[in-house]
Image (cartoon, rainbow, N blue to C red):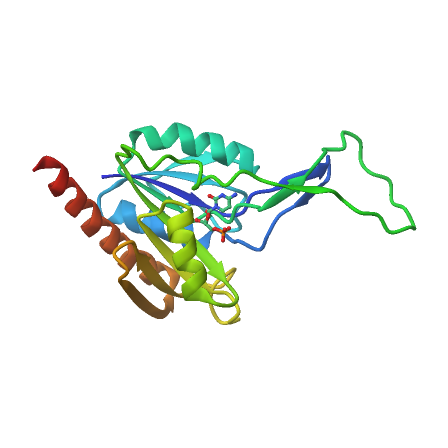
Length: 218
Ligand code: C5P
């Protein structure tokens, strides 16, 4: 099967030396890419500036901004069986890029931000030949927020993690997730190293892919 996995943060430039980003390390997405390669799949890994080394055996496509990620996802999904959208895409970007480094000032100032494009929501669900796995990092109301995102972002399944805990989630080597499916079912994977969670996710995704391929060939 052909996997496209996105991972890591995006960076939205303010001026030539400053940017807006987030704490994503890329560890979860890289672990999924690694597990998919180990299971014999072909993997394209579209990665923001992550803090870990990329796994061997994947085709790496490096991006920096949410707009670059948007364009790369749209290009690569045409030839894939599953998109795993693990990247922590910045929700906002500066309204204007300052071409010259902004001068330090004593007075407070406001930076105008505009929303970035939602990449998952921009993918059409009609006649889609691939599965879409979304992620949701939540500090509260995990289940209701994740279920809303599953529908709003046209995902086939969404992997939600509680980032209010400081022993798992962002930057950590461990994670604990609950997967929500469109059927209404859910499955919890309790706290474990991200590499173990990744193996479990790849198994679940492969099973789902197999089912959808069997349905199509009938
Ligand atoms: O809305 P939220 O950022 O929590 O949604 C998370 C999911 O949506 C992740 O799968 C993330 O990769 C994706 N996302 C996206 N485009 C954005 C923001 C998030 O595709 N602009």
